[in-house]
Length: 380
Image (cartoon, rainbow, N blue to C red; front, top):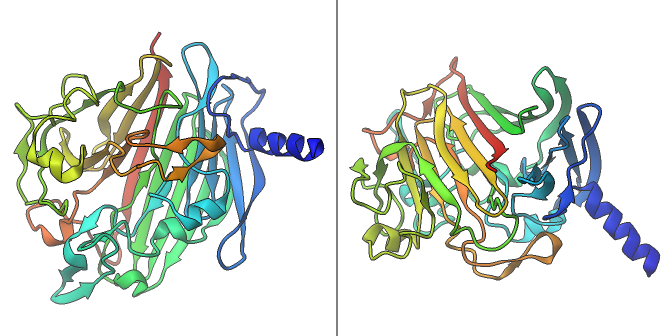
């Protein structure tokens, strides 16, 4: 029994699953290592790929669902801690997960009533978030096996994942060829580069869905957030945008000045009621297609800082409102109400049905792209 316990502990450390208090381990060179992570529902082997930079920071990604299962970043005292929620094995991700660390597609966020019309033809999707379609359907990109390739780049260790989504998969038209590149840079950034091409007109909106907790434990209400947006997209009771771009002035959605998540989340506000808190898209203040800072999050105890940048027009900020204590994650942590938050750079929800929103249509000969940078630092 003692040998079994010791072996389990060694595996946990190897997978980078220390939640808090691990001293920074500076390494002599960037590296990429592999470890088994179980099998998917078909019996295919699932592998964890751990990227390490010269600072000792680590990002662990799974070829099932493109999941970021662990992200080890230093705090103000140099101790490494895991800043994302997730599970210790792939079986738990398959059984029940609210998209922990997931690669989301073909369409991130919601499409009203699971329907859209493109070039005069109506397409019907699974309404897996009744009455709407959510995050690509019943078997979105977060639930498929990706082909993985490890690469050393000038920016740092990278993992390339590729997948071909067949015409008609989850109701979407066109054979969509997708590549997702994860790079851990020397400035402690996790850089995500999504590209896709199609042989038939389709819609595409990929994003990333890690649940962050910069303290590595507890709720996220004391995290301070800045979002570079003058407007947001209000929603109806099913969380579908009304089509309005509403100014954030004098609302709980004004994060232009850094404000704690908990400061106004309990206010009497119809939009907060619909989302159970924050679960909305902000219209970022920058030109379309241009890289820029979207949000900055700080956590006072650890001193960790997260800066989110992207070339997308919108940012979905979600405050973990549906975590309810029924899921037990890494290290036995029971994930309770608002124990994590998401920052998802993307196009606006329901864009295929909202002609006034930036287009998400991808045609043959075009290349879809979304670059997301999650940069970590410390504020002493």
